[in-house]
View 1 (cartoon, rainbow, N blue to C red):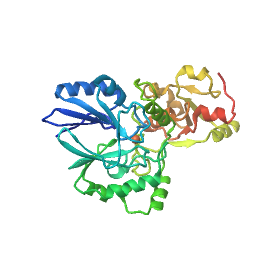
View 2 (tube, protein in one colour):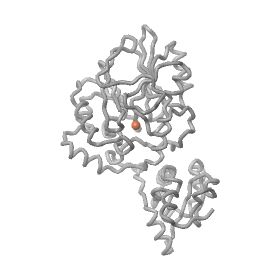
View 3 (cartoon, rainbow, N blue to C red):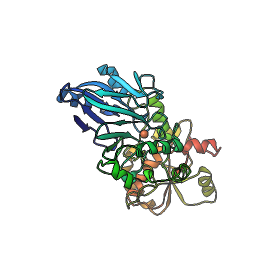
View 4 (cartoon, rainbow, N blue to C red):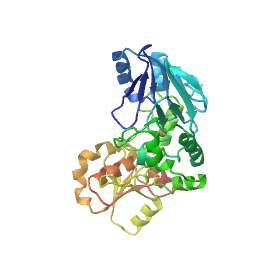
Length: 360
Ligand SMILES: [Fe+2]
């Protein structure tokens, strides 16, 4: 069995191939890397027969539709997957062979309605239904997510053999795949809890903003073939559930501030530093901008931090359209040692909806 993880970043794409037949499948390919995958397949002299997405992703655009177009392979997902470009739908318990390699499908809703795990003889590809160790599992607060269904899926995972090695769809911190036995001991999501205790546990976790992720979901529902179909922040551990992790010095939680609080503080003359991280042209478009903002687009922020040195001790409010880019900006600032950074929740959309004044 050929088994490789192909991506350099936190999203995992697995190449599984049969040495004899030279047939291969890709699990969870990313649109941006499609050309690299094609080169790898060519170098390994493998024929791609199927692409499988373990669920509709919210943090990257799938390469499934593009690979289906280019190679003519089958694009396979859960029967509840909404994307129309899917050519083969899987149901719970479905068994097949990838070349000569037996695999069984286990549906695992909770992170999304269309989540599934692929169970091989010696390993399990868990998608986002289970990550490694203290990373826990994928968030359940996105469209289609359901903490109660996630608990049901966890009970099914707990019933699987201990020797299976767990390969998740994300790993942000270099954790190595380990056995389900280890996960049963160390993964907080597999800790014995009643369903209600589990729901309470998930609902009590602190999660990063998700507005941009909803746009990515929509792009995947629509079988996007353009990597720019949705904006995706760079290097954000988007699927990681905050609250299950220890927070290191360079890995602090981003704090949100409601638009009403920003407005109130401005009204009483508080010394806020408003940092609008959208592209310059957006400040004069429909949503406008708040009077007095400094504009540094998020993509340039790392290189322009020196411009902010004098404001290091001020209360900095990062602002964008909906909150996603501001979240990235806040992380960049906090990693650079800025102590007092908050994200304006809901961004300019929220500000405008609340009826507060803007300029163009
Ligand atoms: Fe996901």
